[in-house]
Image 1 (spheres, rainbow, N blue to C red):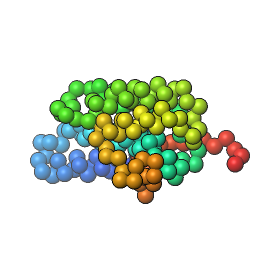
Image 2: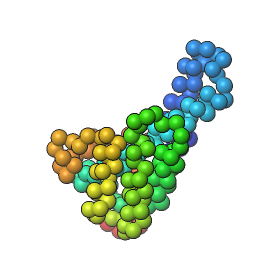
Image 3: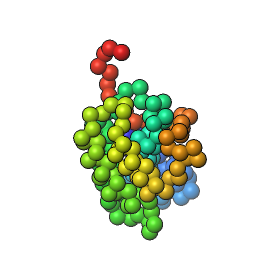
Image 4: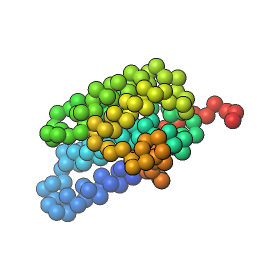
Length: 168
């Protein structure tokens, strides 16, 4: 997650870079290429955290997405990258990202004490819902408890699960 080294993101970066280059070869610089890759990585990180919060906020969606509990270290890594990104300068006035920093910190602290299972404690669900509200993600018409979630999770935004330890 949040790495511009998977094939689909590299292809996207290549296509954007080539469009800049076709428009004006003077734009075909390493700095522009790095900016494109960073923009894709940032957007992927934000979308991954938003997806995670939706999963934690919606029990029906969570049951559909997770066959096993999420990978603890991958979630911490994702939230740490998001916090670094959210704390960086350059966000437009009124951007939703800076408004989610404290809630992201709260979520990380709650996840540190959770024994990671498919049963999510109420405080985690509440912070996830508050995060989504701060990010201006509207509550689904049927409410978070009944929301079935997305039909398909794009693979670049998938939340890794814990490796299977054998058995059922």
